[in-house]
Image (cartoon, rainbow, N blue to C red; front, side, top):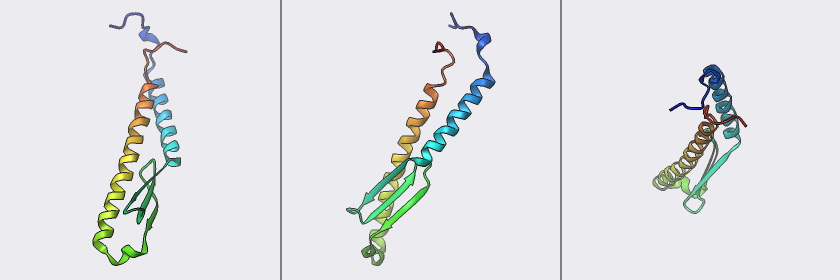
Length: 107
C-alpha cells in the first residue's frame, strides 16, 4: 500500500502548519470576494463577502410599506447569496485539500 513512499520523510507537524497556513490564506482571500444576490427585480439586493459577512443591503423604498413582500424578497436574496458563498467555501476547501497530498512526488 505504501510502496515507494519514504514514511520517515512525512512530518505531521510540518503538514499541519502547511494546512493552517493555507486555511488562513483562504480566509484572507475570502474576505476580498464579494457575492451579490437580487430579488424582486433588484428591489432587494444583498452582498456578502466570502466569509458570509453581510457587507451591503439595499431595499427599494416601496417595500418599506409592504412588510410581507419585503420579508419574502429578503429571505430569497439571502438564501441565494449564502448558497453562492457556500459553494465558494467548498471550492476553496477542495483546493486546500488538493494541495495537502503528502504522497505526491515533490515538484
